[in-house]
Image (cartoon, rainbow, N blue to C red; front, top):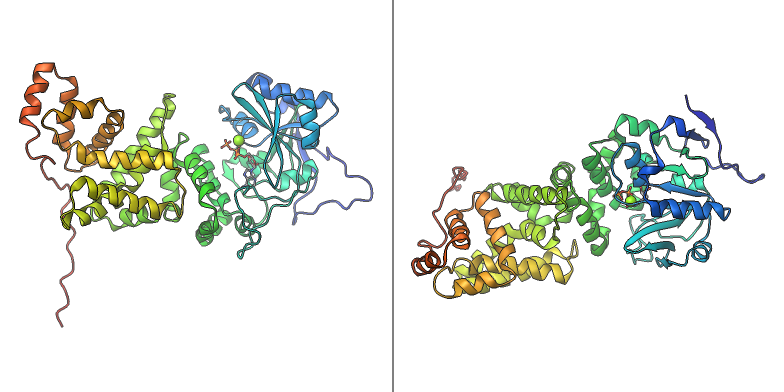
Length: 456
Ligand code: ATP
Ligand code: MG
């Protein structure tokens, strides 16, 4: 059904690129053989493609945009690949800025919409954030080498991400077998997974992200490599892991991604203390709380409501914070201060793995600290608490805890009722306060029996 052609003939005398046993010819899927219609491509992306093409350059839509369109999904963004150099791209578009230190990319601006235009390149590492000059574990250093379309295809991560939509004739160009994998629902790393994950360990997280989002299976060889090489994530810059954590957990498929991350033992690489809390299973709240937080996040995204990393990180680290705060409190530290100190300590340890920008960590800390403030629900301060801008997030977090089996249901109910109550009822409520403060203690699961200490 498909025609096998080589769309980009190499200059004579140049040796054809060999990738293992892979053919170097491309499969060209003509307009009539695939489902991408121009009407589903953003106008701005089309403008960029057409203008490049008119000026005599090759121009393709590539990456997630093509993949998602072929799957009938709405793409998150549209990336363009071209043989024009970044400077040539800049000359063509007034509304253009070049970014990137090691590898320059052009950003073409249309109001708030950005179309990223990348020049074809050979062999690459996407880790712009990686400042290391040399890596001990074989992580490839960025080299700023431009390449052909074919080379550009082979340096990409998964075959389904290496499909190119050609604006010249509306065909899809497939060098790596991405079309077949797309149809089979298979996520296959281009080249040897061990080498590719070593070059850039973040590709392991990307594998999980796409598998969760698309419902694809990771191919067995890549699966094996992920299980063996997960520890390499330790090498990755914490700022890059923060960006990646947002794409993993705050992009609409958080629950599925979280479950797969744990399945492949990558979750603990990002959130070591959370992983410990989850595996200890002494209490079941951490898992339930996290699942509920992720479910809420996914639902909000589906409804186009805003989400904040601060809330999700507050949930991710809550178990560590509350146990550490309990330790401080046992030493007779006032509860709010104990929570503040515990929050500081847990964040300080966590940011070594995954950076959390201050503007978010401050909010997470406030959410935790407010869990103590909300207990003080008597007297005039109650009215002041409710007026503050942190109240909403703190109350939502209290609800999350109550819904996960923590013994704070009564307190959460009290605050819910208080918000809806008439002025007179409110006055009565603050006089009575919440008797018992923390609500009744309830365990849903009997505590695990500890083995009797060995007395011999
Ligand atoms: P999304 O829907 O999340 O945007 P995407 O596939 O477009 O998914 P991007 O991060 O936008 O992902 O990257 C665009 C393309 O760049 C990818 O499809 C892939 O071809 C290539 N790419 C991105 N990161 C890497 C990487 N670490 N290694 C190799 N290729 C990569
Ligand atoms: Mg993309």
